Each structure stands twice: as C-alpha cells, then as structure tokens.
Length: 141
Image 1 (tube, one colour):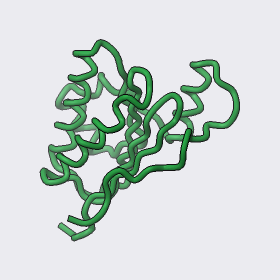
Image 2 (tube, one colour; image 1 turned 135 degrees about the vertical axis):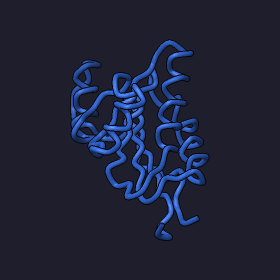
Image 3 (cartoon, one colour; image 1 turned 90 degrees about the vertical axis):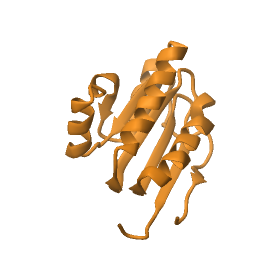
C-alpha cells in the first residue's frame, strides 16, 4: 500500500450529507470513516447520506462493514437513505454478493443527487451547500 492514507471530506446540504473519501480505506481507516458518518448523521432528515467513493484507490472489506453499519442503524431507526455516487465495478460486485446492493441508490454525481433531492423536496435555486465543505477527517496515517 502507498502512504497516501485516507482523506474524508463532508459537505452539508439542506437535503443530505455528502461524504467523499479518497486514498485508502482499510481496517485502520474504518474507525475514522465510521466516526465521520456518526458526525454527519443528523445533518439531514432521514438521514440521507451520499457517498462518493470513486477516488478510493484501495479499500478492503471495511467499506462494506461501514456501509452495512449505516444501513443497520437506518433500519433500526426506521428511516434513511444511502446513495452511492460513481461506485466502481468491483464495489458494485461486492455489494451484489453481500446482498447490500438492493439497499443503496446509485447516482452519477453528487450535484445531480442534490438537485434531485431538491426537486423532490420542492426547493428551488442552485444546489449550493448550506456551508462550505468541511474536512472532518483527513491526513496521513
């Protein structure tokens, strides 16, 4: 593995929380990724969590564990949505094999997703974040 580590950026929108991860997500990064999800959980009704994992160049089963944890919490609370943006073919295969693919929605971009959510909620205007992007967890391990 390279020494690039894991970088996680979050952006708060009115209708969702967008979580963009890049670099390497392995067992060591799982705790940070889970903590990030917990930190943004109440940012939107539901919650609606939009994951952009396209820039992960390495991930192990930890990514499935984190997504499954969020799905289980949503099921326990009786609401919520997980939307994956541009997932890799490998991630789609793993989600299909683990029967988690039916529990997520797939989209092409965060911007498209935010615009769609705005239309669903009856909002108008541009899909601007409610505040600038916040880097919740970043850096090298």
